[in-house]
Length: 126
Length: 189
Image (cartoon, rainbow over all chains, first blue to last red; front, side, top):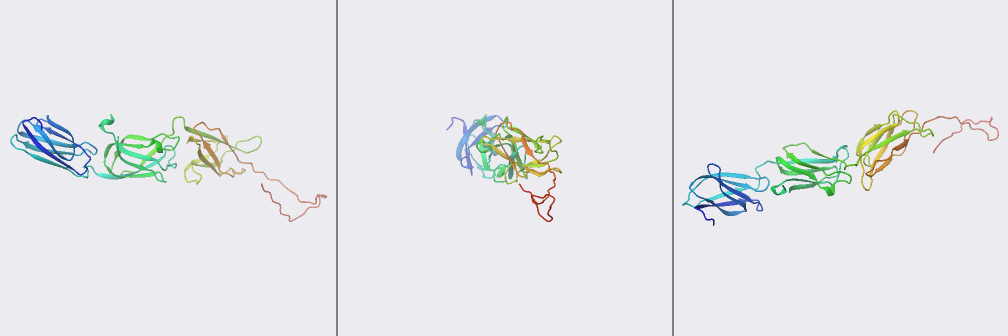
């Protein structure tokens, strides 16, 4: 337990159990009060120093970076439990698309057996 | 890089990606180990996925120094090798003649060039098939197969023989004045 004036329990429930999340507690001026990284499914504590209104943001660490924001009132004398439910369906709409691999100069020359990746760069790639 | 999906092209050169979140900032790339020899890998680091998007064309460029041009000269086959203009050829990338590069016609010098051919270590075959010969010439009877490696190819010479007519007379071997009517004569090669 952190050495602080108050704490709240945040419960993360994710359908994609391997994902991690970052919790960020902001005060009314958007100053970071507490930051907890690498949160998996389950409970974690966040800390604060005075009663008041806060914003608690849970950010999925991997694509598609779902974000859930909640306005909460935290009180030093009262334990509070906040739940976040990250469903499996992402916030973005899913779609299908086709690709066609050919010679750049002759579209009639196309190639079988070419593997194509679709992905995205993460922070650790830089 | 975090990979969302990997798909491999089918016999038509196509792949389908499914359930990709709409958005920007994707990377679409070909795996180096699977691209045809002589071509460069493809990468688009700012790929956007939209709803109902048209098929994405991935054009593979030749490796550096491997964008080759084949010069072809059509001649009449006589000792003087006079140029034959107006000879029309189709060029294919496969023996089954399904992958047509284009149609080429010899110019007044009897020449045409086939650009952007790609060699490979083992040799890549292109197939040149004559469509028509100009009046008075006989088209090349066989399909010409050109095998290219990653070096500038030599000029290819294709012969379109000049057509000529000639007279023949059938007679008694000892008396040439004794001619025979109704004898079929045939020429073959």
